[in-house]
Structures are given as structure tokens and as C-alpha cells.
Image (cartoon, rainbow, N blue to C red; front, side):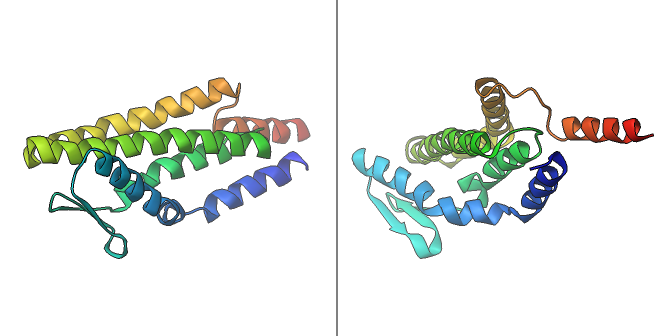
Length: 174
């Protein structure tokens, strides 16, 4: 497939993908893994999936989009789609590995936050939660991206490489 067709396909796919896809795809797993882990630690754990609530020792935890890390998966997908010359197979590998790394970190984050509430209280929960929200999650997604581009030897820069290539094509036609 010619470069231009691949570019159009990548741009269209980037516009079609929605964060809600990740939310609905990963909601159950993001609730189930902490549930199982906390059960192993002998916490009294309940599950109201229809309300997106995990109950731990009588305390309800509602899982909203941010709890599922939808924006992290969405950003990863957009970064991959916005990067020139990554083939379909490599894109899928990068997305699956990156998603797995994000998923594991998110599950650990959810479990940590629940344990913090149970053992240290709501004030500590707020402090740890805000630290994850504003600092750790952004840095982590950045590090996952750096890891993936090094692992898969990606030399192009998202968006920039396409713009540079198109600029050169236009310049050469004059």
C-alpha cells in the first residue's frame, strides 16, 4: 500500500477510536483483578458490576473512566497511529505490550489505593491518589512509550515525521 493510503488509513483510524472503547473493554478486568487479589488477602470484598462498584470491608469504590486508565490506552493508540512507518504487525505488538504494561500498573495502583484507604484512611488515599493522578500516571505512560520505541527500534517521531515527509514531497514537486 502506498504511503499516502497508509497515512489516510492511520488518520481515519485515529479519528474513529474512542476512549469509551477502552473503558467498556477493560472495566470488568480492572474490577476483577483487584477483587481477586483482595480476596486472597482476606478482605471482605463484594462486586456490583452493574453499578461499577467494588465493596471492600463495607467501603464502596466506584470505577469511573479514570480508574480504568482509558486515557492512557487511548494515548498509546494515538501515538502508535501518529507514527510514520510502523507496520500493522508491529503496531499491534506495540499496542498489546504497552497495554499490558499499563494494565498491570493500573491494577497495582487500584489495589494500593484500596489498601491505603483500609489501613491509613481517606486523607492518605486522597494524597496517594492525587500523586498517581498528576505525576505517576503521566510519567509512566511516557516511560512505556520510550520503552516501546526502543524495543521496536522506532526512529520516527509521531506527527512530525509525516509532516516532514509530506513537506519534502511538496517541495520536490515544485
